[in-house]
Length: 306
Image (cartoon, rainbow, N blue to C red; front, side, top):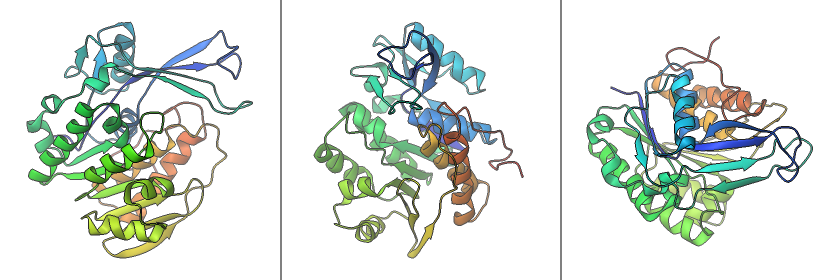
């Protein structure tokens, strides 16, 4: 039985290394990336049992990203190999120049997700399901897969978290708002930025959006605002949380690490506030170094080392 069940794209990440611009760089470092994959790796490093599922290309990039997950200790024998190419992204380091990311994912393998790809038996026996708005944005069939997984989780009493993760390179505000509103209900945990909450719930101000989320059966809503104070509404209790302060080297992946740390903390029996605190520490670790999960340390039983 898995502690955490999650699924999503697993992209090949090419990072420019010899200059801080993809226009002039000639040397690139290859790694793997993807919101749910980042959560899976971080949670696995914290010591919980993770079932991560993906559809990857039957190509060399697909082989490469699978090998990277295997080196992390995650099982990949259940992955589906697709005739569609494996998605990729190309980015600079964002140190001297502004962070710039180009995604190559249209019609990629992960966009072919469909409801039958979800193993109901494995999900039904898991403790937690985590999904994101990125997978929902990849295609209509991927969006239906997210909804299907959520339905299975509710049917079997599996706690579910959803990260809004709106990417306007994938769809418009109007498309995202409509689709994610339909998905964002009856959840254990919802996370997103203040602007994302407004796109989805349209309440006009942060406090109204938190209340709308609660009215839709969402037990805990976490509203982030970059490095500023987070707004949280938990079963009627409203409180703020100041995220961990850190010198940011690379923010990419830090939100995923924070989500993983929070989920793991809850599963390990921490109070919500302590779980969010652990998540904040995980996010700060990842933000302090280059790479989507390079800064994430190993823990035990879902908890960071003391």
